[in-house]
Amino acid sequence: MNFHGPELRQKALTLLRGGAKNADVARKLNVPAGTISYWKHMDRAKRGECPGAHRSFCPRCEGELDRSAYAYLLGLYLGDGHIIQNKAMRTPSLSITCADSWPGLMDLCESSMRAVFPDNSVCRVRRKGCREVKMYSKHLWCLFPQHGPGKKHERPIVLANWQQEIVDAHPWEFIRGLIHSDGCRITNWTTRLVSGERKRYEYPRYFFSNKSDDIRKLFSDTLNKVGVQWTTLARGSDPFNISVARRASVALMDAHVGPKY
Image 1 (spheres, rainbow, N blue to C red):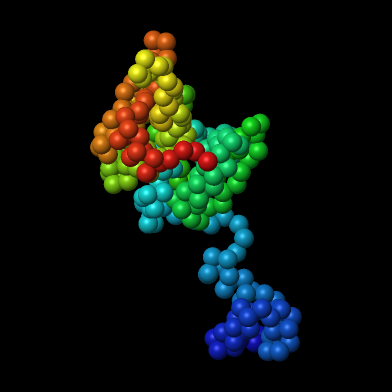
Image 2 (cartoon, rainbow, N blue to C red):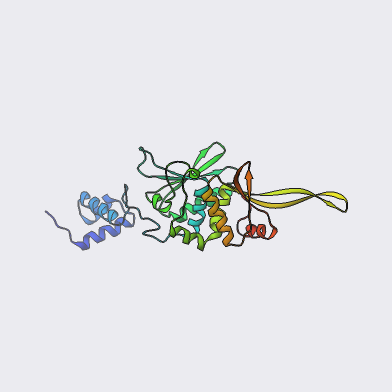
């Protein structure tokens, strides 16, 4: 049996990493092709390049979480997101539904997912009139502890302490995510008598609509922290809508959120 020293093995690995074929390295160094293949496999395994399952790292517990991107993604999730894992799925998936009318929002959603989960792939699934921006991760339960059975408005939605700290540090990103999911900027109009003549008057306004009392409170509490004045508008007997209409508050929203695109 021939024993090959570490110098020869390192020389082979240098050639292989440079793109040389196994057979060429075997002939050049007079080493069996099977040995070259084994060295290459062990080298790739040590560097995490082998195909198959790899240990994934939680971006919050074991990495550097992009807190700004997470605040925005959290807002999107609370509005139009859901996490599922059925028996056929080894890994849970996060989906954010984005209307085809707002391609810019899809791009922002995808970029925020990639920023929060830099080691995961993100895809877009075509649906009628919309796309699901989607990714898979074993750490979704950790990043989104609000997940649970049933609809969001039928169960409590409370931020964990670490989530609240992120929202407090990045309130506008959180507000922006909520508006981009369940909100809008519109132009309202009314009429006024001016010198005896009735004239049309237009003004911009932001709306946020969500059936969850808890999610609306998260939104309104965050508006209070950034100095935005708001009111509640009822849809029938249900106060599902939060309105921002005062000029100074709309100007703040325009500076940090803006219309969908």
